[in-house]
Image (tube, rainbow, N blue to C red; front, top):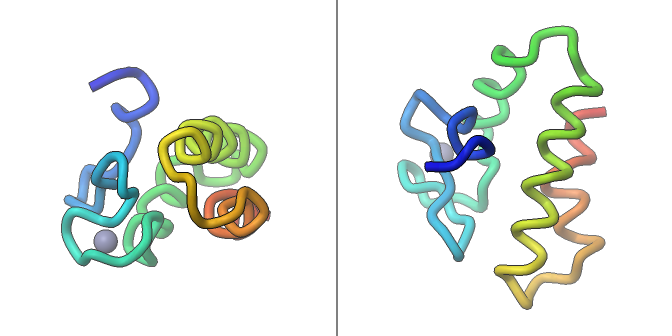
Length: 81
Ligand SMILES: [Zn+2]
């Protein structure tokens, strides 16, 4: 587990790599419970959350040829705004 992944989950809703599906509920990660957990972890620090999700987005784009990067941006980063 690297520094990025150390902050993911804690409630079991963690991404399986390289599919990026949730290990717990099998939805595309970040699933709703994972988003709640991330929101709690970062609290009012929406910029920190956005930067963290941006870093994960870069990893996901490399590991997943599909879907398109723009769709992945919506999935990983847009919800943090
Ligand atoms: Zn989940």
